[in-house]
Length: 135
Image 1: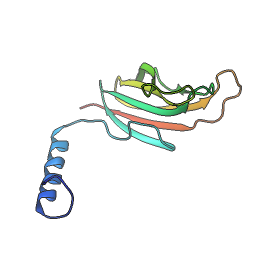
Image 2: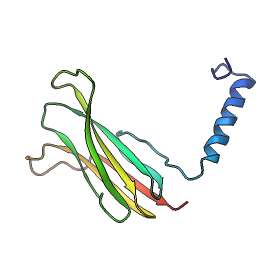
Image 3: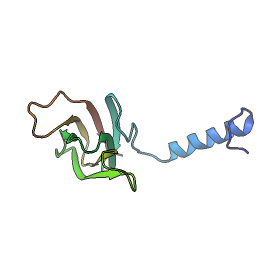
Image 4: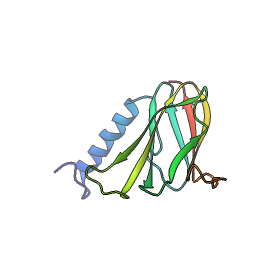
């Protein structure tokens, strides 16, 4: 089929069309949508929403918190916990943070994985450097 890899002209045509579609999209969000180790860079259009989802172990008391949101540039608009349907107690879960890019500028979102009642928290485990651009 024309979308499968294996070399040849059809694959190159498909990749060229994909590139044209991405360019035609105009302003867009780039960068990861889920957590990973280390710092991440994101570029987001004004008014767009973006999601950061970070894995956690259920039943341990540990959870993700975020610092650096609720500024003029980026605002936290939703936070939720996701579990697999029918997951057993203690199964892996995801802390999902949904942000809105309010206006042009930069913000650094720092996520820490800790138990809220234990002080002091460890240094940030993930930092997302967000650049909000105007279309």
